[in-house]
Image (cartoon, rainbow, N blue to C red; front, top):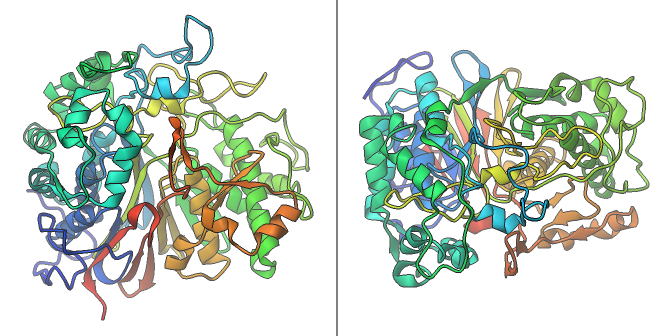
Length: 612
């Protein structure tokens, strides 16, 4: 174990409150008698994540004196056990951190990369000259990007941790060894993947015990993952990036481990051990936008999240949403994101391969150009064309209207703060629910399908497409881990899973809290609508029951619920959008931790010292 001085003073005697009073037990305790609480208020640190075990893991590390970075690694590694269809060693993500000592926001780009053998035509079927069907591309080795998750954990701990990686993996090892209680959400997510999981021996053996869906209330253990974590704890990250774990990953990618009775022949992937050895995270300066006196920091490219959130807010700052009636306020929100998504599709990609005009896209001049295109009496017809970030600021679009490419659907987001006021907003993912469907034999984790976030073929007409695959390139993401400062100090931390809907979910939560006066829990729980430069706005079923819907329809908006799997239209889902989690800093060390009351089974919020 290593220690580092954090903040103004290093507290020695940490009060160990009872597990029940702290809003959570230790990570290895029995979870069957407990239910999730989506809201907690208190002092000393806080965590909001998807599962009880992962929130407990973070609180355990915070109580031991760990920083928000330490706790984030404990949370993320435990989610690899308890939320494995959207998180884990086989994926990547984006880490946004507020340092209470320097009062600065920093980011780590842990996005997956394309193997060296990849190319912009890697998803074109040579037999037909057409793109592979999306489901075929997803459930294959070809879709697997070089994972950045473990490297992100190492980088975060090197910069901001007090404990080493081995220490922070201990809660996850305990949960993987002992097992966690299967709930209705986990069973439902398994049901949605059952047909795919049966195609791969290791996946079927882990997630379909006895060949059947896991029973609600039963225990699901993952000793292979526990042993993998132990190996990483002993040998360090090189176990994955070139060592025995990495060799097993490459073997699974190049030779997908299909079951003897499989009915598919998945395409092999291109990843090599050299690709793993060459992987590096990237420290990036955060994207920044000012909004009504707040400073909104997010993830810059390779994610599109920070720029698209920031541009949308810049457009909306030209209007007094709080003075509008609800129909007009939501109309302006939908139109702003419609415009921002047009710009996202045209201009944003991996900045090592694409000249992204980030400064111009986030400028007041460009926001004024785009804002003047919003007609208060009519919804625009999508796809709308992108603007001209280098133009004169007049109310004219720059080019032809083009649709966007592939959109991932499932990720994972959590937030953490510690006793010193450091803050983490971290979104991590394996892309689709269940990723590629391939569990690495003997290792206990699923591999991502992140490379299907690339456009399979050009989408921008005669203009260059910024999101085509290339060797070493990071696919464009929508992940939007966000930290909001007010007068230089943390006010909010927020984020969500949900593919491209992440961006609109984060914007809606911010508008609900900052413009519409909702509490943070209400801002998260409110029904959602997501306009992404499409002819139809995706909404939740609850949104259709809102009294504003007829007024929005009269302006030309059309709405639809997306309640089918992108991999199989016969698989039904609940049609909800995102799973947001957030923190609000109330002053004098007091924190409000808030998550979802019901979406995806609800969130687990906890604080170290609850207020009574």
